[in-house]
Image 1 (spheres, one colour):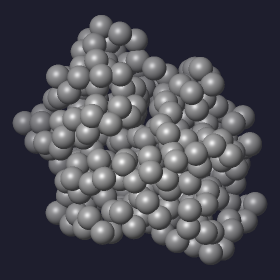
Image 2: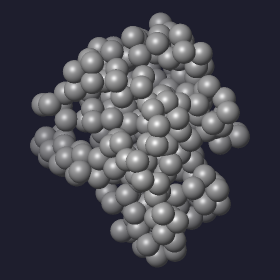
Image 3: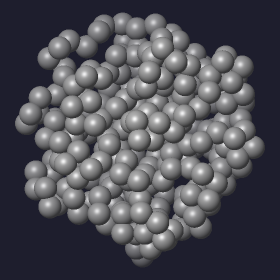
Image 4: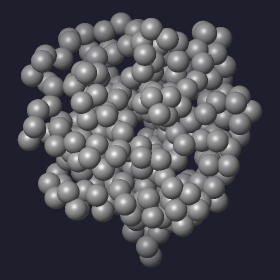
Length: 270
């Protein structure tokens, strides 16, 4: 019963993500105004404005504003480096193929997991760690963290994942965090920073989370190759059949374009 209810809730959260993430994957020609930068007390959904194909997008908060609270959405835009990340809310059979491709191509990745994933797929989490990938914190129950004002409640969402990760792997979890649905506030980012966390958004994503309406190979290649850019933090979902099918082709194309792959530890200077 726990598995069914939890998976239904996670699927519902993914549906909410779809509406929110349109701003992250849609092509906009208008640069966000300074007012779009989130200030204390205000909340926002992470979004991007792509000015030109192949060039870094503009986020609705600047690199400098985010850096005040150890938050990031992009790396060095002068370097052809990619930081590949996956959000993992539940397992539906595609992660082993993704891991096979990453191992074959010797590409490091980060997997942002929720509590349910650690409980339902511990062997895959162990494999991620054993093969040199980063397993990071996507909160225990995937709530809107920007709506949580209590530092204790905020910290509880992170610490429960840390504890479950410790039980599964016998190791301490890296202090890397991604807000569910990309919802955040300056207060929210500060609370994460005060707890020693680095927060990671993204600079490239596409509509890959609808398991019953997956993008075609051509649609995936158009977005993932057409919009790749120096310093890209790429967000993919491990539940995507298309991602599992095209990942090796995409990685090979990125390499052909002169890109190499980095880790989140490198991105945040650890």
